[in-house]
Amino acid sequence: MNIPFVDLKAGYLPLREEILRSVSGVLDTMHLYLGDNVQALEREFADYIGVRFAVGVGSGTDALFIALKAAGVQPGDEVITSPHTFFATAEAIVHAGAKPVFADINAEDFALAPDCIERAVTKKTKAVVPVHMYGQAADMDAILAVAQRYGLAVVEDACQAHGALYHDKKCGALGDAGCFSFYCTKNLGAYGEAGIITTDNPEIAGQARALRNHGHISKFEHASFGYNSRLDEMQAAILRVRLKRLDEYNAARRSRASLYTSLLKQAAVQTPAEKPGRRHVYHLYVIRSAERDRLMGFLNEQGIATGIHYRNPVHLQPACSPLGYARGSMPVTESACAEILSLPIYPELTDEHVTYVAATLNSFYSS
Image (tube, rainbow, N blue to C red; front, top):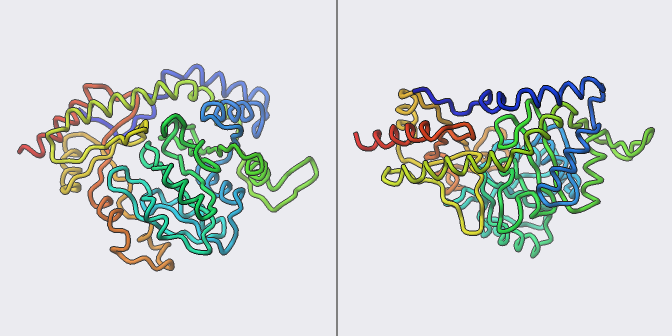
């Protein structure tokens, strides 16, 4: 049996006719940017997350960068974030003119540890970017408490957490702004690049709308030097089709994750833990193994594709070397990066597939 890590075609085929009709409608009008579909998606996604405003942009990276700028981050500021994330989180901070400052993570949920955030605060700290890793919310009550004590903006990196809950609120509705990627493999994915910013703050929303479109505020007026990050109509049309099914997709992911966890109880691996008061949406199903690389090779030999998110922590990336972080400075993150392994998980994955993956993994430890 061959099991891909992700199967985009399996997710597309059931929606093919509806998606083609939506895209055809865009092409019939030839209104390709910031038109009816973008405006409708912004309303629909804001309603889904439970906020007043959503601002469509060109990518999740742009969402982070523009949200930070809109929240008041300026050159010379410091922004605290996680070293266990995709590189774009730190990249967005740099493009906003600020300095990334890293704080270590919790071993249980791979998210920023609030006590480590507090130790990283300086007089230059302007904001904190908690990352909701793998589909589970960070410890937002504690993070928000730290931010309030020091007057920091909170910009959520929710790029892996579409629909994830923290108590009764969705990720993206917890801080000053939330940022989502619609990269094709995400729980809600476009068929190209796209992203969105969510907020209850009208000033942040207004700034983000101007910044995404060259600082444009009226037909002939540009109030600031902005950027070209307009969400295009075809991606918005596709996302509207898929948004209607997001809860269904997330339920399927949770079902597959539950089966994995039940079948891997006897294996010498650490399975994901859903923290109290949180609803994990399993963008990724990440285990930990002291024999990660050998296990990965064994699974590959049996036709099972896996991934590592992420092998090299951000603070040790070559681009971050001027920041001065040495190996050993983020011990929890570095330990995780040596052991994490992502198993296949997507809505179209069958129980038979999950059972085969789990049985193969268990056989690695029993042989």
